[in-house]
Amino acid sequence: MLKFVKNHLDSIAGVEIYPILSLLIFFGFFVVLFWWVITAKKDYITQVSNIPLELDNENENEIE
Image 1 (cartoon, rainbow, N blue to C red):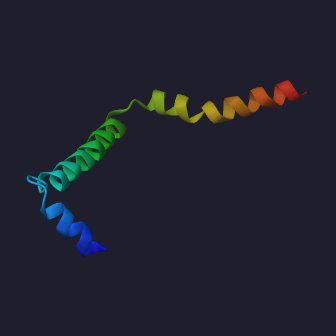
Image 2 (cartoon, rainbow, N blue to C red):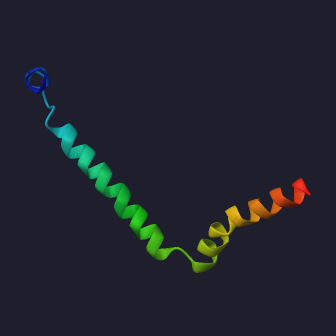
């Protein structure tokens, strides 16, 4: 199976750039995500982390 894929990909001109681009996009995404997490304001993180709790409280009030 791997030989079939490898031989097929060898016939495509310039195919060696795709794994490099994929790695750069993957790495870039996680660098940006890491930077956003480090620079996020504590108030925003607290507000977003309390959303599930607020939704649970609203659902309990609707049931009663």
